[in-house]
Length: 315
Image 1 (cartoon, rainbow, N blue to C red):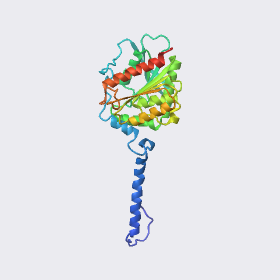
Image 2: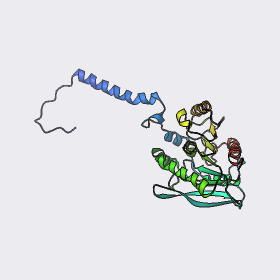
Image 3: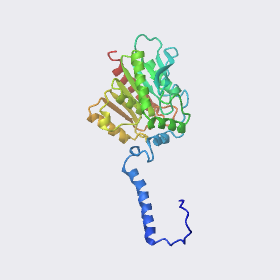
Image 4: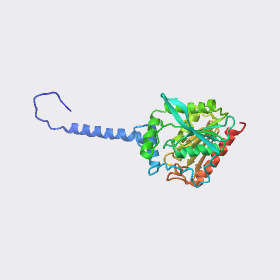
């Protein structure tokens, strides 16, 4: 530390008491870092590691978003036949003064308003695999709008995905605005008589957040997304919820899933949670290292049945 100019003085020996005080200060400093990490989950204190973003990075280490993987998945979930689904890029929102472009898929022979589904991408971004899932939903009879929460960017690897995901987590307000406008596009522009939301990984957590933010939704499906366990927050949920998780998921631990499930049950919410034994995070993503075809097929069957019950009945 710089000191004001002064005549040089002989250095004095450091007293024993001063040494003890310094040692005590060092010990207290160490404890001040250690105790918060032991006191609760790292998400409760963003300064602690691992954060939710770190856990996601660990789960996806070595993964890459392989184009076309969803269409070629050996799970019985097949790409719809050519010509049966019409697709286009549409501007569905304006966030922060910038237009947001999404991917819209509908049955080619469309007459009148169709039930609409907001499709929320994984932490990789709005890429080929998410667009494939939108086409699969369109083949089931829905107007599927795959939204973009990353401002037109996609990640090619875990580090890029981590940065994009963290940016949204640091400032979630634009994402919520984005999703509200996506819902308005489906209902007001396309005339959807009912609406749902679905998402995977990062998008799975945002699927739940969309349902908590937009009470008009009729159904929500979350695949291994970040859970909410606070009953006060969950009180806002009006839409029926289907949650699909892996028992071996270290990014979304099953203990938290069960805690959310118990809170929803106590609140009397219409929620169904399925936890697949032997499956980890991203078990439904065929481009990753955790893909489990049997679980992916069963989860998709449950998804389509759930949407048919809540979005098509009475439409």
